[in-house]
Length: 110
Length: 120
Image (spheres, rainbow over the protein chains, first blue to last red):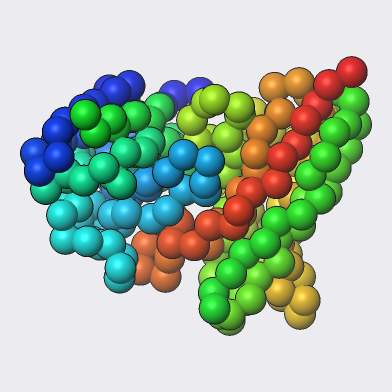
């Protein structure tokens, strides 16, 4: 099954800004909105960004999302130790008629 | 409080069946599309299935099509996943997730997950 392409890992020091990329195709990111999820160790995923750049209530404005063409990115500014988690992008795929997830990016706060 | 609670996971032999349940509370269940997402041990998230609010339409990942059936009981506020002909590769934590109203394929609420192990 196809997946959206994310880097397997990313890292930064406290206070830094990090970005995580998500690459897809015309049948998914190119035509549909992108959503991002955060999964802290040992817990269920949590909604972080929906509709490319919208934050659910309670999500700090340090988290932001963007989309251009068939790619999207998640930016985290003012990195904090509690941001250490796995991050997943996702989008509907019109060819598969289902939701595609990225492989996930493990963020380490050094 | 808006909440989703999965149950029904466990160990089963290859070829066996299990039915997962997801009890919803704190919101008008019937107005929301619902999804199942799974995560194999140490692996990433994989979408499994989707059902619209009144249960009239469903979608499945190719890997489970013909073996899994998603359904819902809006009177009881429960989402189900009937899993038949289970395979070792179906071993995973299964999460139910609520679809956001603004965008039907974004998951705004997740359950805690229930573990399914398929092994002889």
